[in-house]
Length: 509
Ligand code: GAP
Image 1: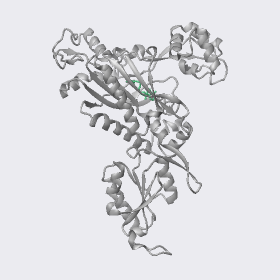
Image 2: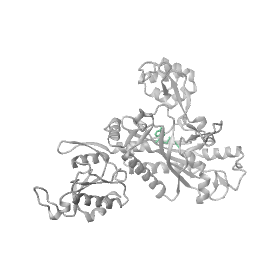
Image 3: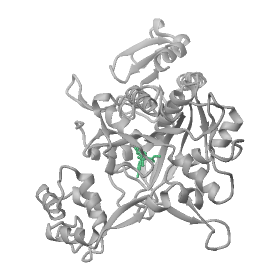
Image 4: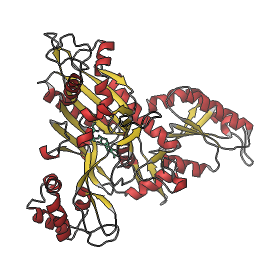
């Protein structure tokens, strides 16, 4: 478990402008968060790092940006209408509603054990216990009551209803008419936009197997109990790859992607030693999955929770959409139709016969990635002089601000002109945000930039421009030089302005 708590991270996020509660001025909306000036930079940098590694640095990947609202039939035939639900129970006394597995998991061990015993199940296999509670709802409510399951709201034993499924998709009306069919869904995963565009991408790029399609975008889940800051939200962002391969090669590709993803996390400062790989038990697999590895990161105050899933979705989605298109008379079935015009198949690399590929899907949450990256970077340390500082030791490519350029005197044109010109020069390198920082006290500026992870602060002072101070002559050796302060070492180096671009670039790229 990290040395800091979730509360410390939440406090830093709000204080320094990374993340705010959504709709805060009206009391907030549970499960929705807004990314502030630094949050949006960090988030964009994480997404850019993912895109670079998974699209630009590979030769077998295409990108996509599909629409968020989808035809109801897509989510019907993907299986989400029928199965994308979490089990929910109500307490008749408090009228509070809970996600069943969360409710049980948050009870004291003795109560959890009593629930398991009442259901004739073992607590060791928690997913199987939840399945039993869902499959035998009447027995489940009796078990929850007799075991003394408490409501966190009242602290008392609840009068629990039978568990029932709650579909997590957000439904929305489309267009001005309110007919039976005039609705769609906000996508619960970005993946379906990839499957429905599979044929478009194949036809427009002439791709052959194996290859993948990558997408970053919003997804929406009406979580019963959103919680733990941005860990479980109702509006989330995903970075997903659907990697299409020949059936039979899927298990090798699954291993390939597991390894690739672990090394990507490592490059973002989230080490393998902090990620446990969960081979998801069959009874806990999503409806489309043949096998899934969940990457479980050790979140502060939460412990090991899923940061990414790497699933083998087999031919479930492309097969299901092809079948339903056939049933609806939109295309012929895979077997009948060999021209492979509209159906979701691709020519076999050797025989040219249409084949529905298998799919490996690495799917990571951007919000959970940001939380993990910040958690790894967050450090509280005592300096040699006994003072304490918080420093966000972000990898430079993720830092929201790459360099802060600080003029030592705000009211001296000689100094501010040079500082502004340095800022413009550094900005032109295209490394990310360079901040002209003239908000006052230099000590405070250093502290603020430590807390938000700025790798370097460049200070333009009197010596830089050949101005003497009140009680001191300027040092001619320091003319046209600036002080560069290193966030991690706290070392300060005097650099020639003429060398600064190259100096910074070599440390940030
Ligand atoms: N297309 C597969 C899929 O959506 P998932 O395991 O349901 O699989 C993938 O979600 C990732 O999306 C998770 O590993 C997690 O990082 C993120 N995620 C899922 N639900 C989330 C939520 N309510 N809030 C924040 N992130 C979430």
